[in-house]
Structure formats: structure tokens, C-alpha cells
Length: 253
Image 1: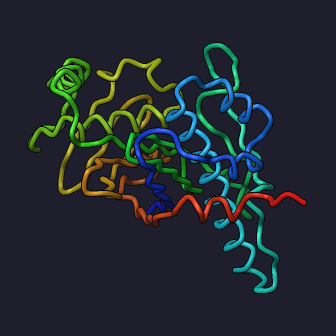
Image 2 (image 1 turned 135 degrees about the vertical axis):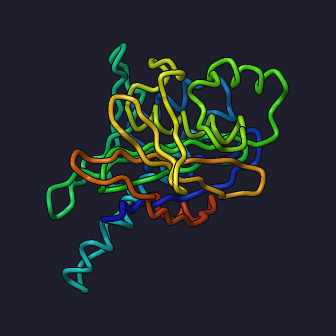
């Protein structure tokens, strides 16, 4: 069975933006994190990511409910609970978690990625996922750092070496793993064969490239469940605008 991954891309201009209309969607812990983030642009992307993730999961839950009952009410984005706990310090940051099992009891796996051009969110009921996006035009010192972090032995053989694209593969796998950069990126072994790109860490992942913007490189990683054959995931994505997210937020009474 082909794994499905749902992605939403929200373009955001570099620098801060007025996202206060989105704050009613955020939990108290998330609002505190927003307020305490000193970089206004980073705070903007954080709020956009958490709002977009809720909107995506609410949409998927509504579709599932209406596949059983066409008259089922829409699930509100504001009703989606998103939590995060750092595995190292226990703080309210790190991999986001959404408590939204499917009718078969499978938990939904979610992931968020930021770059200066925008925010991407992903969700799947088919296993742990990770997503990463990076602007393609990076400084020479950044390329040098990537080449240091991803030595030749961990790069896929037989493919043209694209440092930024490859880094998104590594980051996506580390996010799917859940430990992020607590793991040495060199431990992620990427292979390409027969048109399929896979990666090994503590388990196997399949990867798909993501092109949400001509200036952005992205990747999605999804785990291969035990006993299943690795197949390229089916990744569907759609663009969202900031004003669409604001509509999903509770309105003041």
C-alpha cells in the first residue's frame, strides 16, 4: 500500500508579519513561546506553522468523518490540540504531536518546517513523517557546513550531489525519527536505486522531493513499517495564504 502524505505550504515574506489574528488558535504554552521568541520573523513562522498544522489536521478529520456521514459537521481548527515535549530538557518544544487517531486507531504523524520563504506542514496516518524546506540560494559557508555534516559516505551513490536538496532529506529523516539534531546527521545513510530514494537510521524511511516554490528545496520522509516493502510515498500539497489561516481562527465575540 502506498503511503499518503498531506502537505500545506504557506508563503511568508522574509521578516515579521502581523499574525495576531492567528494567536487564538494557539495554546497558552504556544502563545508564551511566541511572545518570548526574540526574533520577530521566527515568531511569525512559529505561529503560522502551528495554525497551518491545525487547519490541515482539521481538514483531514472532516474528510474522514464525511466519508462515513456526509452530514457530519466540520472539525474546527481551534479544536485540534497540538503538544510538544523536548526529549532532552522536557520543555514545551520539539516534535509536534497531535492526538487525532483514525477510525482504525492509527495515530496521525505531523511535522513542521520553516525557511525564510515560508512554512510547510505535513500529516499522515501511514507512519512517522518528517518534512524539511530550505531556500536553494544559500551562502557559500552554509554549503561548506552541509558538506562537512554530510560526508561522502552518507550521500546516495549514482545521483548528482545537490547539497541543499540532500540536506532536506537528512533533516526530514531526523524529524521523522523524532530526535532531530541530537543525532549526528552523518548517521543518516541515503540510497537511491530504481528511482526510489531511501534512508536508514534506526529504521528505514522512503523520501520524496517537494517543490512548493521554485526557490525552495524540500523533502518528505516517511517510515517504512516493519514487514512492508519500501514504496515512494504519494505526496499531495496545496498552498495556503495567511488570510485563509486567519479565517480558521476563533473570532472575538
